[in-house]
Image 1 (cartoon, rainbow, N blue to C red):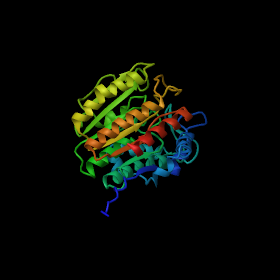
Image 2 (cartoon, helix red, strand yellow):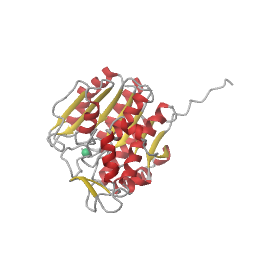
Image 3 (cartoon, helix red, strand yellow):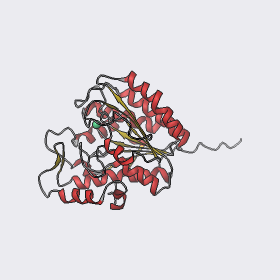
Image 4 (cartoon, rainbow, N blue to C red):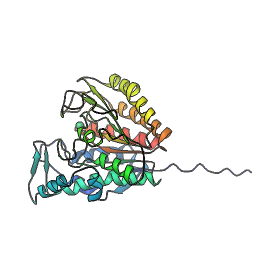
Length: 317
Ligand SMILES: [Zn+2]
């Protein structure tokens, strides 16, 4: 009998979070609430996906890793703003409680760990189920529920620590990722492609400030057809031309039609579809490597369902 070598087992998908991310709270009625992570986790368990994930606890980000993205003055401001009790508001929507700083450090640290895992070949993909989110945080400013720009910290780590030349940031959150744009606009090592509802908070992004920023605003009411057309016609050719060695996803699920904070009309199937398309790009240029991190998504059931579809494709794609 000829010996048949078994197929090598596919590399696992990492699921990275930290208990501190459940302790960061900005008041009883704030939509960016700890239940968001519970909704995702519950759905992954209920759908049977959880057993296919390798779980990791996020380490705190280091000051050196943050300084690649944020100014030293800003880091000091955030540290000094951390309250010993109650809430300290940085803007009308963004506050710190006594656990927020640790949560933010672990949220950014999760994306760094995810980057290390995929670059070391221990995992092929990673999903960071973390909060606070990050894509509105600018170099010198917290805003829009965001403290540290998690995805930017990960992307800079991939460039500086792992020596990559080209990384892509894909942002399908319903809000424009102004913070990520602030960090990477004009940096030719990074291609950012995004869709977002416009006009809507933070009211930026209608113009592309540099060739490496591919912003595609969508009008209120746009749904699957418009989104998929943009991805096919604009994102995928841009990604194909750029040939990213690693893909980062700012995975906000607030463009879902059930989301209370915005007016796009995506459904779970759109998140599965776009993730499959990104897996295809990653397979062609990046050894399959994708690091995805949670941004927005405020309708809890829709968030759980959408994130589960996204993770399912990361595992299978
Ligand atoms: Zn958002």
